[in-house]
Image 1 (cartoon, rainbow, N blue to C red):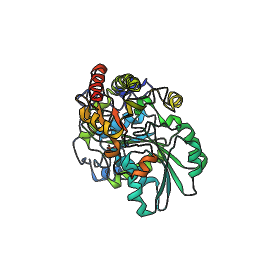
Image 2 (cartoon, rainbow, N blue to C red; image 1 turned 90 degrees about the vertical axis):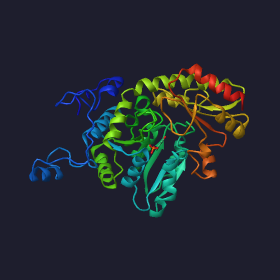
Image 3 (spheres, rainbow, N blue to C red; image 1 turned 90 degrees about the horizontal axis):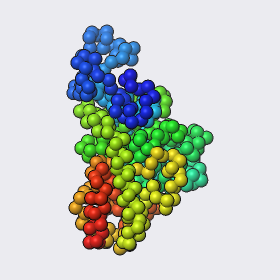
Image 4 (cartoon, protein in one colour; image 1 turned 30 degrees about the vertical axis):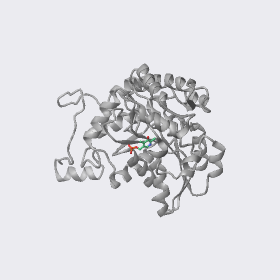
Length: 396
Ligand SMILES: *Cc1c(COP(=O)(O)O)cnc(C)c1O
């Protein structure tokens, strides 16, 4: 553990957590231990490491100092017992499923869950008898109604992608405790700067590091942070065997991105707040989903459980799908691409892109209408962004 992991304020922890200057050469930036394996001092030491009687590294799939630095940083930021870095965000999701869902188990999930997090249950885990109800988890009464004897997981994404619907995480934690379920929260859209689900009572938190935490649209990765040693050990065992672990160089890049997380989140959020208000007042815009607008149905809940509404906006045009398509084909500064949370502003159409794998009827139930456009606001000058959106709207 780094000496900095001692209850400093979040901005400070983001910069220092997980690493202190290396004792051998005092490098300020963490070394990249680009090695697959570690030499034992003796046969006896090797045996002691495998038996867990001695602390140390054996083989990179089982652990590596550069990866550990990233894991310790994120465990600190999410206020968890421990963290496990994964190759991608989806490796984090499938590790959680593999660890906590058994044959014929039932799960309750947010309907607008990230496309593959939902589809892998419906098309693959169904072969092992796993079933799930994907519902609007912002409706707490509905969650209670769906609980069955074999329900093991309550898997919530809040704010949800791409509808920005917000689920009351404290209320979900209460339900989970009452019914002996695990509450897992996908915190990718908020980042630890804006929301700490473990503090609200969740058992496990996960992120796609690809998004806000790395923040530069140049690495994929994931992380799982657990409330307790027991949950951490269970996930660690499954991850080490199933092999969705991270690479040391990847961990180093994510750590470098992480160090500016609060600056990026604050700037992007400031831009998003202005753009959302501007869109809402625009005569060609039919509706805007942004938790920082008073018109958002869970605006009060956002203020209660988050430190801010973040930088993701979804909206629809009065001209519907056709007008939206023209708009996203007309942007010049915003980039037409999936993914989110990078320093550059991205625009995309979920119904034909990120959520294309979700059947039409289920997309509609989840609020992913054909006219929905998703904007991931970046850190550019906001006037430049508004000018670009204005000229694109003029063409749609
Ligand atoms: C991108 C994303 C994922 C999956 O992460 P990958 O790194 O692409 O595997 C999961 N959840 C959310 C909310 C995401 O945005």
